[in-house]
Image (cartoon, rainbow, N blue to C red):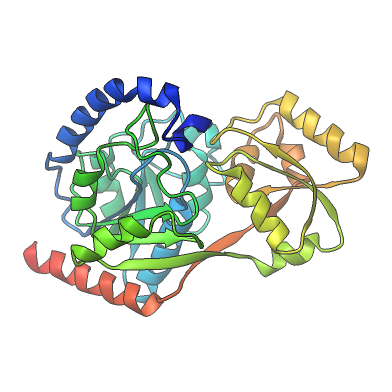
Length: 337
């Protein structure tokens, strides 16, 4: 879905009118937060956020997986598979599945680590453990009560923050903020900006770490675009962040096309993008997440071959602190189990 503009404006009349509906939604969500889910038998690290929309969860999951592997762990991801038709549980195979089957984010992650898609997250535990999981990384699911979370890391964009801080549909919050804060073990703030500073202060007051991180463009991706004028397109939570990131790397972005998050690209979309690029001699570039939706789609697979992917990774300012937090948290869970 595309984020409504009024989610960013506390003074919006429409937002104020929707507050009563948000109160009802929030009461139900808060009740769900208080429920206890299935114990997985191995530590479960949840990477989530307080609000709807993009914040950098997928790069965070990938970064955590790399750190966990360096600590000798075997991480396996469990994802709901948003946007996919398969209920699962099923292991994602990037050579066989399409985004329409399992969702774009699981498909992208499955190129580097084992991913189980399961609409009922608790049902994904057995296949994850069968793959040798010593730690389960739960992609999203902070507000879902079916699988017990041992460590919850919340991701917030440092520049965008939490919008008007009202509960859906009056704003982007998935549940009332106080019970979400109370269940947060660590906060990850991605990128510069002070929009989440008060949230960071609340987490620190509870004794939780606040970890700063930044998106780092892949050098090969940047090099491939040097000297070219590009048409950048993206269907992610915040396409403008992608466009800004390209320009910050010195890429000549001559045109932009923004789509809704998880947008299912059609042949009509592809034709329009190709026409615009050919007209002005532009190179097409998109995110790895968007490219995952284009690949393995027999109707537009040829188009995907002509699109340059812009890869990024997440780097933590203090990785040593994160490693210590993960080691201590995992050890504590194992002592209690």
